[in-house]
Amino acid sequence: MDALPDTGGCHGGRDTLQAAARAAGKNETMDRLLADYPRGPHDQPQSMCPAFGALRVGLRMRRTATILSGSACCVYGLTFTSHFYGARRTVGYVPFNSETLVRGQLYEDIRNAVVATARPDEYDAVVVINLCVPTASGVPLDRLPRAIDGVRVIGIDVPGFGVPTHAEAKDVLAGAMLRYAHAEAAAGPVPRPRDMAGEARSIALIGELFPADPIGIGALLAPMDLVVAPATPAREWRDLYGALGCTAAAAVHPHYTAAVRVFRDAGRKVVGSGPVGSEGTDAWLAAIGAAAEVPAARIAAARERARAAVGAALAANPIAARITVSGYEGSELLVARLLVEAGAEVPYVGTACPRTEWSEPDRAWLAAHGTHVQYRAALEQDLAAMREVRPDLALGTTPLVQKAKELGIPALYFTNIVSARPLFGAPGAAALAGIVAAQTSGRERFARMVSFFGSVGAGEAAGYGFDGVPQEPPGLRERMRRARAAQAKAAEAVGT
Ligand code: SF4
Figure 1 (cartoon, rainbow, N blue to C red):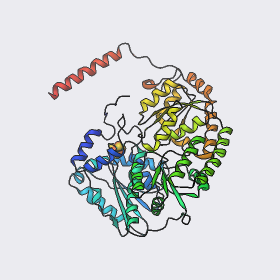
Figure 2: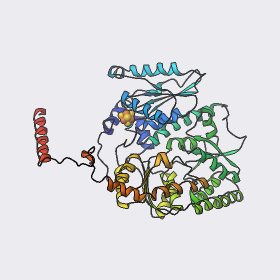
Figure 3: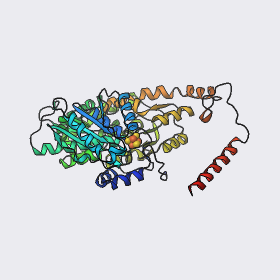
Figure 4: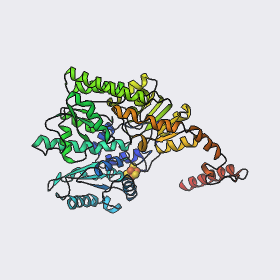
């Protein structure tokens, strides 16, 4: 698909604000963001504000305060969404107006807020997130004190015109925190992570996973004498040291470019893909064993055990359906792989995330099994694929599911339903078959609903019921078109 025009979006225009940010001294930041998160064919955000990803990572960490700096409407939306998802934490906000922004007072206000918040008895870290306007205006968070009374201060720019998805915004904060912790660990002794078992060799998982998945992955790794290290994004500051102390890292979600860079700087090998399905789990365990330099016999034992368990789970939970997969979480290719291994036909998978080396094994595997993989997929591409394929089930984002229901196609929300289940190893192989069968068997019901509501108004006639949709007066559209053209001409004349 050709690039769609920059339609402005909520931030008023990507190119304009990028130029403003550069003019205001954010050249280095913009270069880094554009290199780490290459743009897609469409202007973002098509879904929620990307900064939500960074906000959520901060809010999920213990003893971490998160402060937003941005327009009130953006902050309202972000706080609303974070509480909708059960943040149960205060979101800090430093307001501004034109004057405080232009005169540089906003930076002073942020600094004062950070100083007031950084209480070592309550917090390990204070995170400040610059949204679109403060980033475009060059508010210099890098000049904030690095620490106040031992409380780390992390300032990041997460503008919608520089970070395409909320998935990648998670990486902006996760990467910044890892970078900080790496410097601390290099400078001297650091506290021990709470849940680390002795001197065990460990694998650090990168990506926000369903809570049972790290436990299942731990079971897969056990025959290789490996344990799971604290996850990235972390839940507590000292977990960052535990993650960095791993033997090797696994980029299970493939868009954590900044975080991976820190693991590599710490001398850790990084493995892509994830243990999905039988073939996927087998290949992943082989790659992990090699990266961690596990003796061949132990790798073989782990693979054999996993093959038996995952193979049995897949055999007991076959899927016979044509399914399209679309999402913005980073796990779309892994889900598609699992579905194909379970017997589904998956002609299309679209992900809002970029193509990276960490999803390359999955892309190649899916391509070899007849699946079209669309990175940086726009909603229009996901919808076009669904219309063309007419799947038995569409997994996707809210607008896609809405459209699927209008068309009478059974559909499930990727975030709320698919991501709320285990994905890896034997539990993952058993998790999806039930909901796929329940949805696809309801296809008839969807078709009946479409025909039942067939005479009800839609689009501009929405709200009109079974007793009919009012008819347009003849010639109305043409008269309105002419009136608009005359108005535009008059406005142009005034302008000149
Ligand atoms: S911060 Fe930027 S991308 Fe987010 S809601 Fe505000 S204008 Fe939109």
